Length: 254
Image 1 (cartoon, rainbow, N blue to C red):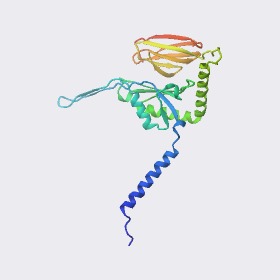
Image 2 (spheres, rainbow, N blue to C red; image 1 turned 45 degrees about the vertical axis):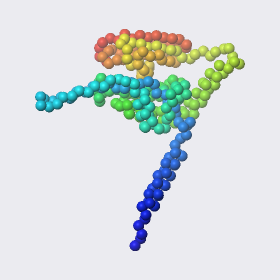
Image 3 (cartoon, rainbow, N blue to C red; image 1 turned 45 degrees about the horizontal axis):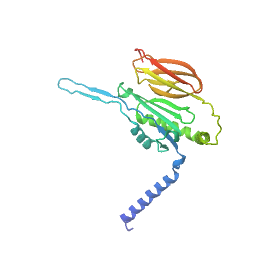
Image 4 (tube, helix red, strand yellow; image 1 turned 30 degrees about the vertical axis):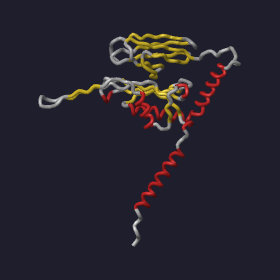
């Protein structure tokens, strides 16, 4: 009859295997400097309301919640669901800018969580989509960033380094007096009432009032708010210009 294996030996073996697995995971994880860096803009949470009912012998209830800053909660959710990126609080040091917002007041299952991700250097949109939950928005952003970073990560870092070199050269005492002409314009969008969605060429970019940097050329700006008719403006902007738009929203279908 074989002697039973001591419990202490079993525990030691399990501990060794666990430590080995953790060490292997750390070795396989990409170094922090190789991860995509993201900047999360100040975002707001959902506004929800709910009601319960019944007969005179039954029950009743009501639930309300209001919009409040949720940037910290979004950063926490990114850390849990998207460990392959690093959240950075200095926008100029990041590779992607993440915009998340939530439209409330439609019932729990009809909320529209809007998520948009932009390449910080070029300003190009990586993804713009609506989801049903904060977790879904983070997952959508994470997958888009992961895919784009895998395909274009080295090029993004190279472009960022080149841009920083140009800034350093321009600030150097020996730099040429000539300054390169800007290639983008600033667009200030406001609305009556405030808090409307701004879409630039079909992609969600923020809420009114907002200042937006846009490439020179032709663009279509759409302002939307629940309970009001959509407002649209087509315009052509030149490099270095400052354009102010004020959307007077009319009551009507959203």
